[in-house]
Length: 225
Image (tube, rainbow, N blue to C red; front, side, top):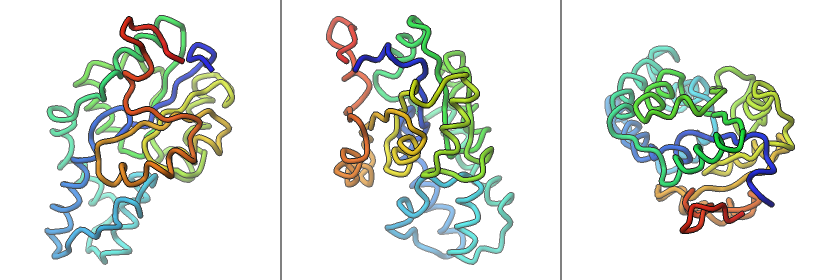
């Protein structure tokens, strides 16, 4: 298998394209603390793959919060936006892969469970927005990951078939969504502790697995795959 056999690369955002999972754990702890709750150990896995709206609804149900979904999403956006602009970097090797895609006419898209304002903030701050022809959030489709809806939407918007897409994902719900969409899936390791505990599952679900995007290239910058 070679990278240039694909017509499109589709990236998850948090934990895959950018190093941001640490931030969301901190936000969950602070947010729930305002309402007298400790952040449960199983929370990250419970909300894995949910859209921004689905996650807000889950918080209301589980923690009986006196807030609407729009209020919760507004609070989360406010808490995260500056961090996305100033503290969240792209993962190592991302720029090399995006330049490779541009050089080889491979179209790129983002399929994220996050909110559009936050996506825009990090893409703009990192200067990578021009590399992506399509950015879709799970709020735009019927169901979030592990449903394939968002990946199918991005492929359609890019004008490619699912079989021509290579998906990059860091968690099982996203990997499952990509496979259900009929796409090839590359697992990407994340430094987040929960993600490390999921490595065995990711190895089983994905077509191949990398520690980071630099692994796709040799010391001369040539593609290994």
